[in-house]
Length: 626
Image 1 (cartoon, rainbow, N blue to C red):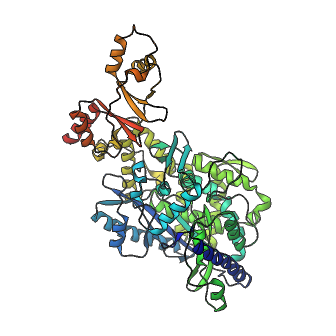
Image 2: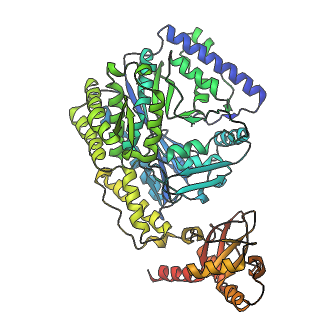
Image 3: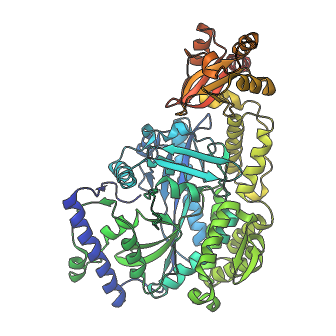
């Protein structure tokens, strides 16, 4: 997430000075490009591993600060949410056993994290979106308490002028409002970096855009969010909407999202790519600069372009251009941000090798994409792949082709050639690209998740199914089984023992009526569906009462009365309400003491679920019997 001491750019003086440094950084980059001062002729790779921290109940665990303190290792850092962490791997030269080096370091660091986490009764899990994450973990208490994160939240909300509205439609539909950028923390990725030559940067960047759709399609593993089956790679829609600074207006106008694929092929130099982003996106964060990049350049000091990098860190291109300094030398690289974390280390390494091989194997036929391929086809491919993953049909060089065929027949040969050019070990090439081929003709992580989740939900409650899915992911990850070999998730009869809150066991498939509905219609619905409790909502969507089987019977006794009675005339108005975070035991005690049969569950007075005393007592008895 960049510099942790960055502040909101609302302070006029800080903002003004920062923008001056930002403009000087661009001038400095142009001079360096003209003078050949940016490293060329060498390729390096690097990566950032984001991962989830989960409790032994398979739910998010907000103890990242404690683990970071105990790790005492600069490779680790916090993320936006307290249930996520990140590993920054060391860059290595792209040759020989470089992928083995990256894999070995990643395994060592993850092993270190697991050992520290186990002492705190915490597991480490690699997954694009944690299945068991809930709305509860989106509260401010789960945001990492660092100034940069609070500043980012303040600025994004300030520009929007309203709360965030998340609306994603797949097989299911998710529509929910939220008051912070924390929904972004549901995303966990494996970010891959490739250093490229400055003179080839724009062509390489455009090629990275062209291959993004099919690469994403065969790597997708995040189809679930808050129990809903959405996109094959739901992270793409979630990330864009969770930090979207755009607002809805009555005017029809184009607005640029800070999370985007792009709108056109890039042209010119690397500096022009950065210029486009500065021109299109407001400065969100700022910090005082210790030195001026142009002055550093005059003194013979390699400038770090800190203002440019901070601004670039608040623009979330799926393929992000990056400038950096290593061992006193400036370089340019492309960061691939669309690949999800997991589902295993070996899957991630296969994704890495596939992408790097494609980048290096680009042939002359793809040298000038601005004339040979339509950018809107490429962007469409990316969106299709995010929605339907490996099952997508993409448009590639004026023809329709499935992800499977494009990957196996055209892209894998390019990747083999590219890795061969870099003199990567043959056994490594065959092993890692072989995994991609098996996944392309077999199953992806997204396909496994959907198939398993549907099977589990046929026999289990939603929360139990999500727990079972997460538990299986963890077990397969420990065994390091590539996802194309994963078997369907087995039933876990003991998953409900991990439920502690009402939100874990409540029913979310609800029948409701309005206060002004006809009482006759409401009671008919209860009979048709054999429902014993129906919550009543007012015009604002707030729970205002409850209809029960007893009310229905009383109404039927008054059937000779005028037929214009409304629900408001017969409902119970003095009712008890619960909330998702309420402990199950607390709810049982409340219902027993007040002799009530059901409890509507609300969030900010809006109905989100319902539980009955029979269900809770059965659940409690099941737990005691284990």
